[in-house]
Length: 298
Image 1 (cartoon, one colour):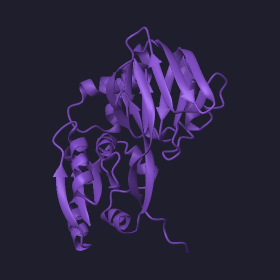
Image 2: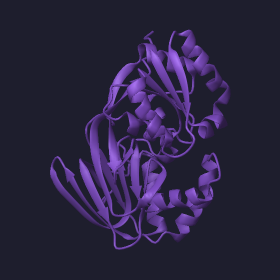
Image 3: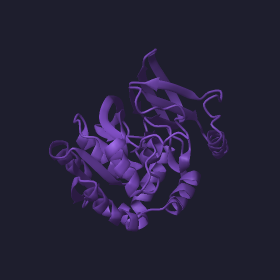
Image 4: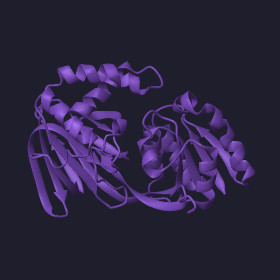
């Protein structure tokens, strides 16, 4: 098997460097023809994913959620599957699908992994694998982006989160969406999330019931106008009880448009992506992933 290993050196070098050095020799011992393709900047993983779609039998993606998302975008429509090596801060995609930063896990995926076809979201033409957020969380990400100088950790979020908590103005947002049951319209102030996978930052299950293989996106809107309500939503989300709260909107949708009379940012997979208006749609069964095989029963 010809395997392209797409590596983000910035994220990979920070946490799992020693085990990562074992990966390519291990795959070669397994008999695979392996090429190492490092990224050098934003957009590179997408280009390398496109190359892998034409030149490889499988692509191992080493990096965080941003790298995974870009590589997935390049692989859309091809039959070449991805295998993930989590090397970022959150690694939401990898954790959701059961991947570990371990040469043995990658080896087992390539030889005995189950091929899973998953959906991708598309936000203003940009793919996302996990979630897109409008308003508060996007403002946190935007602040972090301005401050970022290299690899980030969970501690890097403290100051942007603290500043946003006190300075966010809760702008009015209009959401119009299409669901299997019909048209949805919401006009108010709050937090808006559109998810393809259930995990979110710090493991919060904001889009609690989202599945990456159902051909739908989960829309969660938490009405919010002040700090007390924000803390309440956060605590209920921790225990997965936020969806049942009166006033919360939770629906499965196929497309969505969000607008605002104010300048409101949005983020996609933890990356600052621009400001409203935002158009989102689902790309069903867009990519293939070879997920770890189930452990043997005892």
